[in-house]
Image: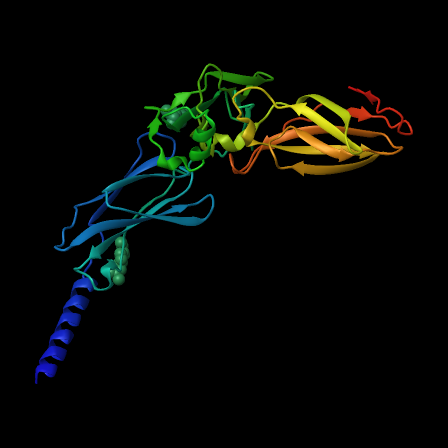
Length: 356
Ligand SMILES: *[C@@H]1O[C@H](CO)[C@@H](O)[C@H](O)[C@H]1NC(C)=O
Ligand SMILES: *[C@@H]1O[C@H](CO)[C@@H](O)[C@H](O)[C@H]1NC(C)=O
């Protein structure tokens, strides 16, 4: 008898749990607002739900049309900020998640979601194709845009930017390491989108922007918008980039080759000076022997490499650099250093000639 009561209680308890967990509703209202930050949108939902013995979380899914992927995050807050391409459809879904004793298994998500879809303004001529930027030696940021078609009439192109950056300027060794996961650090942002400080013109037309006189912090999400006003509407181009992934170091200088002990040649060069921490650099060496080129990567940040001493042949080498994977996800190779040659003379004395 006692056993039956117990089973009945368990059954009742389970069905209660089922009823409870199946009634998790998604948030009633979701809104997406544009604060004018060129693609960084605020997603807000409510009203907040309460359930005894549970904490309420929200799961936000948003669609990134440039990579055709959904991104999802869970938060206990009522709003998040996410990055979108404003030239594409904006799609956001929010679920409610209960976690705690009020639900079986400790965590339950609402079956449905509340969705917001915003269609982009597709009116107008599609004049702009892409913006590309290079951050020269982490000192000067230069961006260019490519066009599909000429801007009609006398309209002038304009570039606007807005950025999120980490509060501390991260020049220290430790700071740089932490900064790869820089979302953990405190963020600051520009209040409003600003216009390009100095345009690059070619044949009387604007083709790019030099961000001179602006201190661009090392780790920045930079949102860009290129647009133009004319009698016919022109579609704006939006782009977002993490500027540490667009760094092009200066070419290495002072390349030298010397004979070293144990039948070896020692090649040495100087790292580019400036804001790039030395441990962030990776080298590529090109060696030429008898007109044959070989390329090798030198993953260490030491600006030195040992090579076997050639017996009778001459050897020339040059080197270039790039940011390594510990400091950036991608980068631009520097220009090559001047080429330097070692002339083997039947191995009497290791004479070194510099050919520039
Ligand atoms: C889920 O939500 C969407 C809109 O948010 C609605 O159109 C759809 O009917 C809902 N589905 C169910 C099964 O309730
Ligand atoms: C260009 O973009 C800026 C920044 O969003 C905006 O203030 C401006 O009105 C836009 N101009 C045109 C012609 O759309």
